[in-house]
Image (cartoon, rainbow, N blue to C red):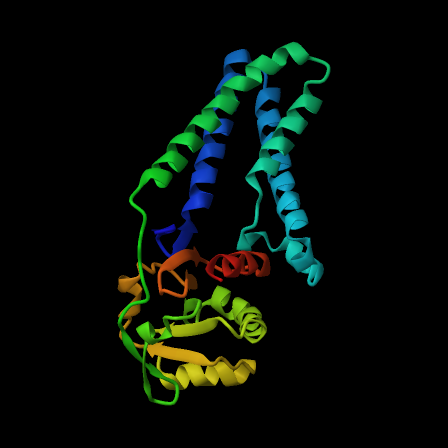
Length: 268
């Protein structure tokens, strides 16, 4: 599982862990500021976090520039994810060195909040790394096509598969659909399978017609049988399977072009 459900919201685990690590860093800085009676330590911590996030985004964009160059506004689509952790750390360190350039001896005090944040991150990501890996495969599950025929998901084995679980009422699903349609056309050797959950054939067909979208493989799961088989807890969820039908990666939430390109490389 790569995400947790918080009420109506679904939060990817990597974002949750990062948020908790940053909270540990900011909390330690706030305690330091109160102990010393110097609010500037709290201000420094917040600015360091902002500098780190900005650097992490810039680093990711630079690393995927050919993709972002095709759509410059997508640089601002931070809700899709796309941050480079190493660049983020370097950005925070660079800001810290600049902020204390006239008081270099006080840099040692900055180590306490930094160590607190690093400790939280180390524990959380270490636990995630040592857990038993999920070895899911394309399930033996027969669903209906828009034409009323039956198709078993296991039949797609033998080729890389991108399995998108979605619903017409889901705003992130609707936003990523045109991009996925383009990706399907650009990758004929990959099977893109779109499984609609909990809706009728009429609802799905009406949505596709209104949006002018066409996909080769649209399947219907009105009884929501697929979600528990693959631990889908939110929409959209996109799963990437290799030629043997083994799950290689998954993404809960809206996909970016850059992330999709990276995932496709992993299943080819």
